[in-house]
Length: 396
Image 1: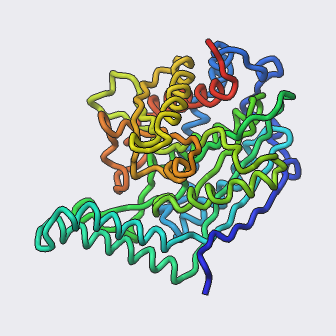
Image 2 (image 1 turned 90 degrees about the vertical axis):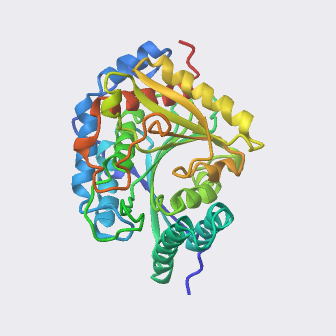
């Protein structure tokens, strides 16, 4: 029987063997690639048309139908589309492409959901109560699906793009941009896991995937102070098992890339999901994002908060119109805790889940026509300003 110990297989494929776009639709001049201020950041990003970003969103959704449920036909199509699209978008030198194939730790996910039920439901409600019975059924639905995955000995694939720093100064830690490409659907009335219905998962998380793809097109042409990894994560909707595998394997991956002291080289992990929502009630206000960092009860909290503040400051210097609220974790939708538990810096950027949450997430109604594409564009540009400014430590 297969053992779920995160067996890791890395295939390192230089992009040069595929070739970049013959005529790039987005091209950064040599004078623009050396960025010294956010004025230059705005100049670079002004040339990246909103249609490019929205096109990535539309194409990813259309190419991965009927849905991206793990182990479904759409999920397989999403994998293949991402591999193809990354090759098409890369315009860099020395970049590499990886497939991280891993054996998911389904047992740890099963234990997590059972423990969550015991701690938050069974310890609070009587076994005869409506709440206890409802959440018991939901927990059983999730754990039974995970058992089915385990019995079938299914695997996961994290799809990774790597760009080494082009600067001659000593290399800093690695910046990792993550976005998951799988999706899940739950019945709106019962809360039970649904396997047969077609749905787009446009905000969660085609929006994060589109942002990741567009970031490759931009970052491959810039000179940052850090190596950059953009990772399209599998099995995120199942206790973020793709993030867990990636976090566990990161030292080995970086060692294979020739990084010295690879046990402690993560500068920051940035988890992107649900970036394109703004409700009708807030249509005249700024685009909104939550920036989630380590929980208050974490020994890593103060350091994590300082990094979160620095990143938000760089986002704000970009002046692209997004309102960013700092929020301490935990937050169930992010896998950043796998890094926090290792005292590594990680943040999640997502919808404003306290003031303006997206009620359509994990429902059949999460399709492109329900999104605010202007807010998505503003959020993406703010995030890019954050990544570029954070790496270069821009002052203005």
